[in-house]
Image 1 (tube, one colour):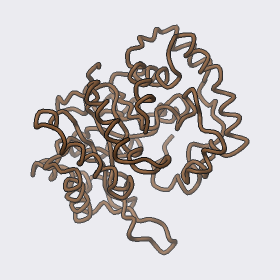
Image 2: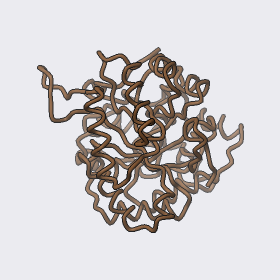
Image 3: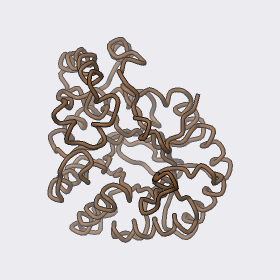
Image 4: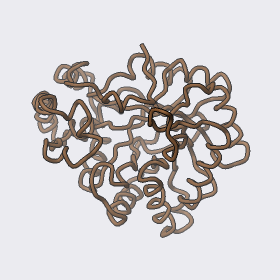
Length: 336
């Protein structure tokens, strides 16, 4: 597995990571055994970057990772570079009934301590602010995160779904290890400044949903499977007629992947890795078979000609429907 920088401290991780939202029931029922099988395959294939969060199953994802770590010998326990996130207070709601984002020092400290306990570790590689609290200056939040580094509970910090301008403000206080954003052939939004700003600041761009929540795979979700997933059945890209239009639009991509002798998901990963060396995709999956497809994608050496072909097949703006519904857009920062 190719190694790439995670942040700006010299930490190296495998080019492919694992998004552990799939270790909860977000995209369908799963269990501890399935999650541990994914982590075992990761261990065996040099995938050491594991990304989770408190809100993934309200601690369930972190607990399953912690349980797996407890089965390992000391050397293998040190293999994984764990990233987690805090800052979403699902116990409290504002006067409109909306979930509260809390980036106060007190709340983030509580979030981090609880995450460390569930994971069974004393320190994580990376701690993200999962959602920005709009009325709290990001410089103040950054100071809090710097303190976590100083006391040895985290090695780096990052922010999820922030604008390039917010990143620049945070980086004026301390180097930011990573920004996490949805980025794939179906979501090119980060190219409006975030790809460029992260690179110039030495910040990793951690790409979640790199296979378009299944649209960039050989077996995209159909209407029946979407109905079983609360998030997707409210997501514009998975509501008819958008879903059928998106499946049709990606047919040629699947054919092109087959022509190259790979799976569509592997080709989607290969495309992202070719974009720039500071981009780190973290697909989520409940299937070791699907994970193997994406591992194989890391071995593809796409040429400039391949990249042009792919972007002719799926040009910027091909997807039908926004990537989030109005409600799902609450929290992520828009820009440009």
